Image (cartoon, rainbow, N blue to C red; front, side):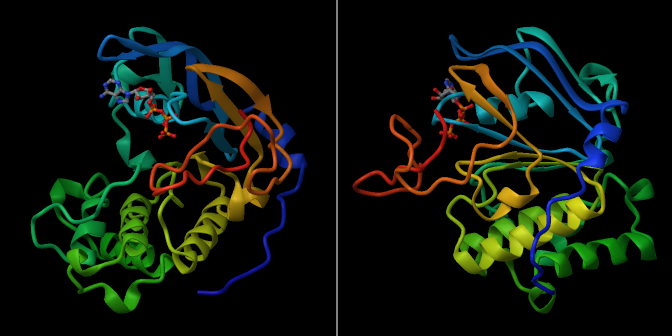
Length: 271
Ligand SMILES: Nc1ncnc2c1ncn2[C@@H]1O[C@H](COP(=O)(O)OP(=O)(O)OP(=O)(O)O)[C@@H](O)[C@H]1O
């Protein structure tokens, strides 16, 4: 795997995309968790090839928004469409890769890295049988996240950052056109962060549409076309990413890393 300096993609592609069909469309999306309204009328359109960061303070509804996009949280109002198809009729899940927030690749069932990543390819495999191309795609995904030499290792022997790499490889195994990742860098060691950033660069270069829930832009900042900031379940900013800011850089920010211990680590995120 090579590490390259990231360049922003040519501006021309942004205007080209405006003519394209939305990959994700949320219209007046409302959702509640328990009795609590969490999404309070979200409008969001993401077109092909865009790389969008979804930012906001803890509890602003970021995870709920992406989970509503993939149908894990039902809407109580409004609409969501994927690739132009209303979610209730959408069946082409091989086009979507999803990396959930802070989970583990170990499921309690003994499994190797290759087995977990292969599960992400099932949506492409005909009748559940893997062709040579399917196996090659699985190997490519494992290689992309720098775990080729560990492919036969059990996932429960991995560090947190390596787990995250496996989950990303699982999402990439189906060669999705849309990649949705919920805080992929959270709790990940620096070496894995760099691998993940490089993996993302390669996906973006290949034209994959990306929606990333992030605490802060960090290493992936150069890849981001657009930032959408949520507050209390509403979109309060949709446009250029905020300027790179450091820890404690902005007054009034209120995002706290959930994995922080003791004194909360506050990040320089727009609030
Ligand atoms: N199962 C649940 N039942 C009730 N409320 C919930 C549930 N899950 C989350 N919530 C609440 O819904 C709100 C939005 O949560 P969500 O996880 O979408 O926010 P977030 O912006 O992703 O936050 P974070 O940055 O902390 O992950 C929060 O106030 C959270 O406490």
